[in-house]
Amino acid sequence: RDLHSFPTRRSSDLQVFYFLTPSATGTYMASVQNGQLQLFDTTSGNKAGSPVDDCGTLLSWAGHKERFACTNSNGSQSAPMDQLYVFDVSGSTPITTTASVVHETVDYTQGAAQGRRRLFSPTGNLFAFTTDTYLGVVDLLHGTPRIVRNDEPTATELTYHDSPLADLAFSPDEQWVLLQRGRSLSLHSLAQL
Image (cartoon, rainbow, N blue to C red; front, top):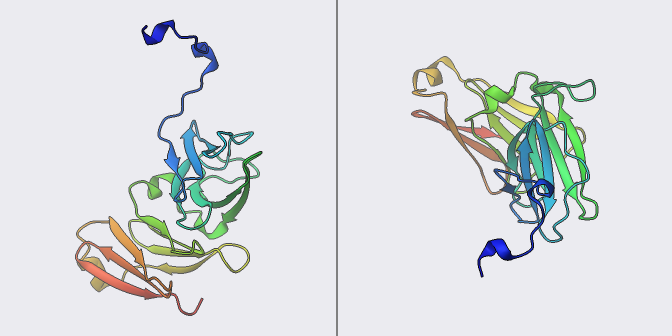
């Protein structure tokens, strides 16, 4: 028998999600469509009740926590446009999310985030991101998320920037972040957070 002879659901009953992005643990999957993020629990097959409106671009999942970062490109009264948001995810029936906005990131637009490096630290307590000109580090451990480093390159460093594209790496103890941009390599201390 061919596959067409088996009973199936009507195609109008099916929802297709493109570009599913798994969390590092594999427990959740995320899909962004039309400026909204939809979460799925891979262990139960459950979908979050309603999409996350404050997440138009998924930036990164944390490695050891069910946490992700995104920017909001839609803008609303409760969720200003072009801000960095961090969400903690839990549960499966239903999936719940807890959002935190990083207020000092009004210049970290969806366009500025596109094609730029960003990553969570090994514990997921810090989030680093780059733009064409600076490195930002967000503290997610001590109360309200806040920018703790916002380093702009020196004039000397700018001469070695062949490209605005950068690469980032946290030290295993999260005391340092390494930034490579073009031919320039810089080490930034996070010890005084």
